[in-house]
Amino acid sequence: MTETLFYRLPWQSSSVYPGAHPGQMIGAGQLFKRHEPLIASPDPRRIDLRASVLDPFSGYRVRVYQQQSSVNVYLLADMSASMGYADKQQTLIRFLLTAANSAFGYGDKFGFIGCTDRIEHRWLLPAGQHLGRVSALAKQLEHLSFTGNANGLQNAAAFLPAERSLVFLLSDCHFPLPQLRAILGSLQGHDVIPLVLWNQYEYAALPNWGLISFQDMENNATRTLFMRPALRQKIMTAYRQRQHDLKNTFRAFGSEPLFITEGYSTQTINRHLQQRAA
Amino acid sequence: MNLAVNTPLALAGLLLALLPLFNNGIRTSPAPWTALIPADTLSVVIVGCLRLCAVAAIAGLVLGIAGLHRTEQSRERIGHGAHIVLLLDRSSSMDNTFAGRTANGSDESKATAARRLLTDFVKQRQTDLIGVAEYSTSPLFVMPLTENKNAVQAAIAATATPALGFTHVSKGLGMAISFFEQQPVTGSRIVLLVSDGAAAIDHDSEQKLRLWFKQQQVRLYWIFLRTANSPGIFDQPEDSRDDNAGAMPERYLHKFFLGLGSPYQAYEAESPDALQQAIADINQLENLPMHYVERVPKQDLSAVCYSVAAFLLLVLLGAKFCEVKR
Image 1 (spheres, rainbow over the protein chains, first blue to last red):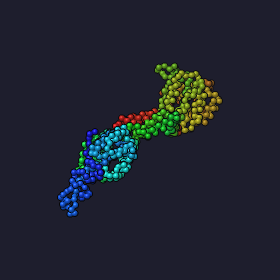
Image 2: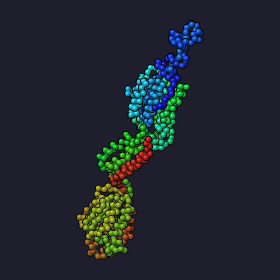
Image 3: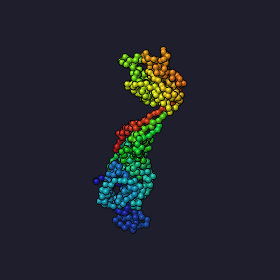
Image 4: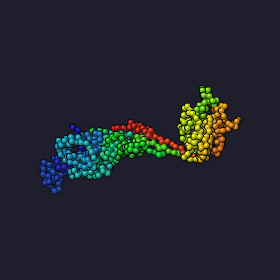
């Protein structure tokens, strides 16, 4: 797993620990932040003579620099039954490993919160820097068949730290919009990057004619359809409308979603991340 | 519509007809969220129809197994016609021709002619109730009054068997009249006596016949198939010593019938053509409106059930071929 996510923060991390992202701490850095009195920052090497001469109170002024800080990266994953559709589970695992690798590469801590109809402790990984634990989790996920719905996502905020973190929300968003609003509302304190995992196969690859019976993966309700070109068009329109609604909802909460419909690729996510930081 | 089944126990299988309501039998494909699929009325209608087809197919099979049938029914009808009892002479002389010889290829016997013409007669009288009785040494009960023309035709055809010995007309008449007992009096009641000879009727029988003819209001038609050179009905005796029932039974039987008090008509037929004329006369005369009950026999409906079920199963099979599995 050599792929890396190049995520940048458009905000300043409040983390104390040095890392790779702009932070609120001052310390060893390259970016000048402000002047401080020598008494507040007793580093004679950084005395700025020009500023000291100009100081009306004749004190010594010291240049302080912004410290590059670390940030906590969380993967908030929807593990409802619908995420078991087609290759979504593999995508989840692949993204988990990629994100963990990248976070560790940046020196950030990585945590995982897997949500089904509630949040289970075995699908919780507290923020840390142990690749082994992530790999073990990925291995466990590989043999898991997803069940239930995604109600647990609403409680996920309780498992996130109080300070602002970077949260990847990986879900297919196959739940009602009010529920999505509640989730996003609870995640307001964090930087949320929604990744909406859809599979083209579920709506674009439908047959033109024939009888087809769909069984809902979450509530087991069946819908039998007499497929015909008009209905196929209607279904595709419904998915497009849904995509539109989801985008509007995410934007209302200040985050731009990325729809992954044509197979997972780290490059696509990287492009999205770079657009976001700009 | 009185429906019934042969084995009511098999109707328990009708419970199976509820199965399609729980499972539509179409292989399901997983879908992440069916709520996203827009509502589609046509699909709902088609699926509903398929379910109904399946329910009906199972119900049809079960009803077929149970042996669904329509019970025998009677239908009241009003038509023009009569209750006719054909009273046929089965004495051996009937097997001779009108010329008095044994029948050969060119001349048909009196019985054959009577049979042929009566068959036509029955064919024309579609709304009548017709019974058949015969007599020779003793009366023969052949066919009660029935509207089933095929049965009557068959009964008439059965007289083709060689005839028996004597002519016992009084007992035959008694039996013919007894056909009308327990029959409603509608239309006219006719006894059509076809014979080629007569016999003396004893006093007791005369009394009884008089009574019965009055009671049952029966009209009598006598078609006398006269053999050439034999005494006829209307012949006057040349010698007064011959004027008795023993010597001229035909004349005396005719007299007796005239004295019955009920409508009576005699035809003397000396050839098949004359016989045909006589029958045509009767055919014209007896067409009074009558009220009768037609019986519709039991009808087996299991074949219908099976064919309906087979058709529905074909429809379902077609739907199965239209199925898409993803």
